[in-house]
Image (tube, rainbow, N blue to C red; front, side, top):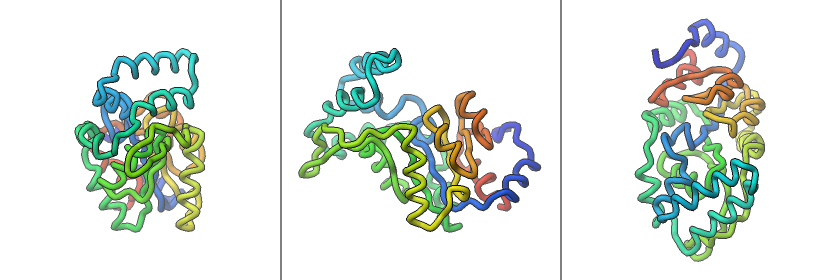
Length: 229
C-alpha cells in the first residue's frame, strides 16, 4: 500500500489538529528523482567527474558549502538558463506534480519550492508548474546571462526563514504551513511547520516528520493536506 503504514485515524487526527494553507515542497529527491540537479547540470557541461570530486571533498569537510557553490558556480559563467533547460527538462520527476498543484490551488493554497539547489534551476520548475515562489542558492545575472558569481548561498537553516517570509506575505502563520521533503536538508523546516511529510525519505527525515509516505505519485500527499477530500 503506497501510503505506507499511516492509519485513517491518524489522518483524522491531523485534520482536527490544523488547517493547512501554505505548502513548501523540496526539489532534489522529492520532486526530482535520481541524481541531484547539481550533478545533472555538471554532466550536461561535461564536468561530472569534477563535480563528484568536489562533493567528496565537501563530504569529508575539506570545503564548506559556500566554497563548493563558488567553485561550481563559476562553471555557469556566460550561459543562459535556456542553455541549461534541456538538462533540466530531462530530469526524472515524481508523477502527479501538475495535478497536485491544481488541486491545492483550487482550494486556495499557496505552494512554494523550498530548496537549497541553484535558484535559477528552482525558478525553471517554478515557471513550469506554477509555484508561487522558489528559494535556492542565488547567482548574479547580466544581460540574461549567468555570471558564475554566487550572490547568496542557501542552506538547510535558511528554509524556515524562506517559508516564514512567504507565509507572512499571505497573512499565514507557520502553524498553518506544511513541508514536504526527503532528507536532512528538510529537518530545520520540519521542526517549524505545523505539518511535515517525509516523501520517499531517509530514515532520519521519516523519524522527524508528522507523516511518512513512500509513493511514486505526488497526489498521494493530498490525503494529508486535504484530509476531508
